[in-house]
Length: 213
Ligand SMILES: [Zn+2]
Image 1 (cartoon, rainbow, N blue to C red):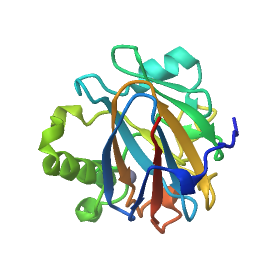
Image 2: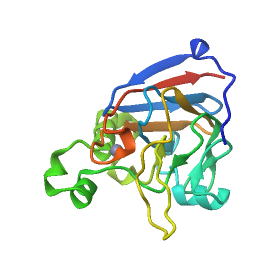
Image 3: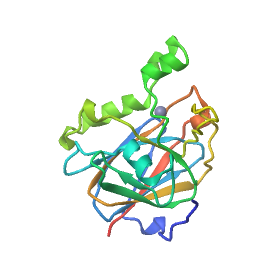
Image 4: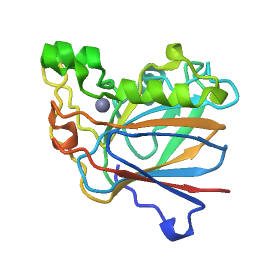
């Protein structure tokens, strides 16, 4: 559901720009609001969330889908953890639909889906692995890289129950805004994928804004 936010970016407490193919890792406290903006359109932001006080508790796609009875995410979606607790809630969304079924790109999936020669291409999983290595203080390890949300990504389920990666429904300036319901680590890979239309074959930066209580 499309819902605009009343918050003004010029009054936000923190601002970041995440370059195409780069990662963003940050802890938001319970009650804080984080907005992700697709600055140039058609850019997938592959994102993982964790309980910052115990990262073994993390975002769970299956618990979220089951509890809300919908495979797509938008305003009102409560992101559930693997312990079925509330992690964050989408409180505004001008894109209207986000995927949590398609998973993230990896060198392995690029090889299987596209070509053996694609193995050397940079992928979201690489960015996440680099992030947890460069931020050991957060206590994340390889086991914690699990299912994710693909913000702004259009992955419709077909009539026969398959998935297809389609051109985006997002556009320049579209955003999604979440309120943290517990202290949460946000780990975002600004997807570098060039083998399907999820980034319009041209990965571009996303913006992050955070508002404190
Ligand atoms: Zn990716």
